[in-house]
Length: 205
Length: 71
Image (cartoon, rainbow over all chains, first blue to last red; front, side, top):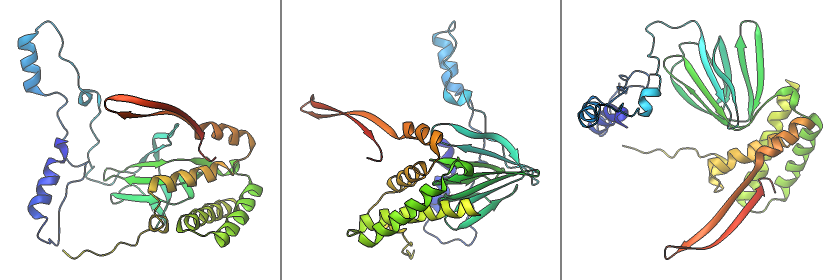
C-alpha cells in the first residue's frame, strides 16, 4: 500500500494539469520496501525479549529486481495458468504474445506494457527452438526490468488441438450467429467464431 | 480534461464482463482438445460450492451447487 504513495501523490499534485512529460515511477523503479518495520520490532523486543518478532510477508518476499541501466541480453518470463505454472523464471530471447492489438514481440529492454491477450498463439523463442502455445485469453505484463509475466486461463500446445472439433465448432457458431436474437447471444456466438477461427489459424499456420 | 469514449469490445457492449468472456473462451478451447487432454481439462471446469442466504443474523437455507461450467 505504501509503495504506491509516491505515485498517488504525483497523481494528486499533477493530475489537474496536463503535463507533456508526466513522470510516474514504475513498480520496478520504486525503492524496495523494508522487510521489517523497525519501530515494531523494537517495541516487540522491549515487551517480549525472549520471543522472536513475527515475520511479515515482506520478510519472505524477494525484492523486485531493479531496472538495469543497460538493456539485458535475455528476457525472463513467467507464464502461469490457474492450475499450474507453465514457465517460471526462464531466460529466453524473445516472446511473441497474441495481444488484442496484434501479435506483439517482446525483446529484452521492451518498454513496460500491459497487453490484453486475444485467443491466439504464444511463441517462446529460446536460441533456435520455438515453443508454441495456444492461449485462450489473458494478460501479458512487461516490466521495465525485462521480466515478463504472462497469465492465461487456458494454454495448450498446438498438437493437443483436434482439427475436426475446431471445424465443427466454427460451423456451429457461424450458424448460431445467424439465429441469435439477443445481444448477449450474438456476443457469445461471435466469441465462438473468434476462438474457433483463431484455433483454425493456429493449426494451419 | 476531455474524455474520449473508449471503443468498447463487442462483448462488453452486449453486457458481458471480462471474466465471463475469458471463461467462455477457455471452455471453448477445452472443448476442442484431443481425447486424453480433453478429459483432464473437463476436471478443471467443475465447480462445487455451497450458497447460503442469511437473514437476521441466521442462515436461512443452504444449497449446494455442483455445476460443470459448460452445462
